[in-house]
Amino acid sequence: MAIPRISADVEKPFRDALGHAIRNELQEMREGLLRLTDEQIASCLSLCAIVAIDVCGRQWPDEDNLRRLGEAATESDNARAFGLKAEDSYART
Image 1: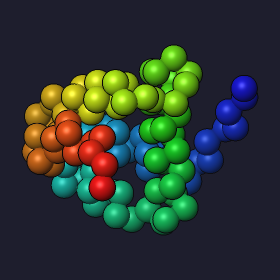
Image 2 (image 1 turned 135 degrees about the vertical axis):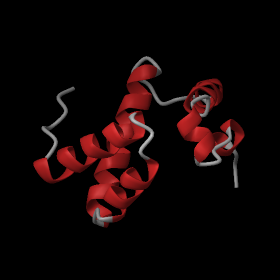
Image 3 (image 1 turned 45 degrees about the vertical axis):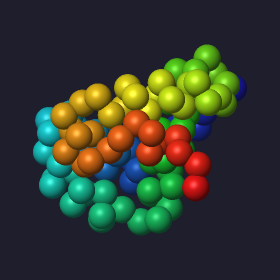
Image 4 (image 1 turned 30 degrees about the vertical axis):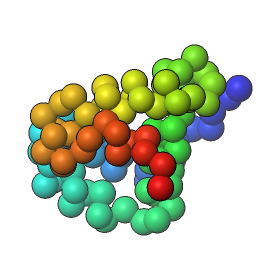
């Protein structure tokens, strides 16, 4: 399956946001993300989903995958700074 090239208006802000997250620059990351359009945010979320699917063996994550992804995603100091909890990432509403 070929994934189309990411448009520059999504790629740059997404890379910038990831860079800020890696450097624990949470305010800068937030400010950059708030400048995105709804369409750009949707594209960024699609990229995150593609990564999650790839990590799960190129299939939709099941309950166990979601729990492991949630736990891994909330181990960092950055996630803790946002108040993220693993169970929130897969809790059903």
